[in-house]
Length: 128
Image (cartoon, rainbow, N blue to C red; front, side, top):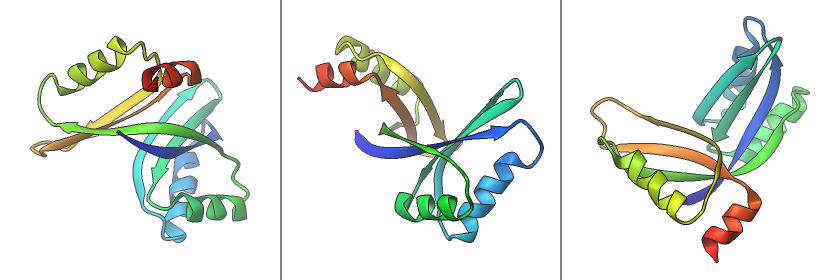
């Protein structure tokens, strides 16, 4: 399990909102490792994990795009049926309550990646 940072950006629910963010990062030569986005009514959230968070934050700051930074865990697992369930069962057995999770893999790929965050109290309990 690797610790990493996730940046979250609130956007208006309109065409091109996510494109502006990824264009800003791309122009700054920042590689996006993971992206999740969703809308709720008139606004949405774009979350990204980046290869170079420091450079990404500078690019977003320069573009006056506000973001929040959150510590998340990233775990690599086998890309096979039941692997994610096994990982989540292990976390649950330790009393870890997830606040958020997303995962992805490529068809035919050997590895999958899951990203999740937990409540601070649960994270402390899991490591105790």
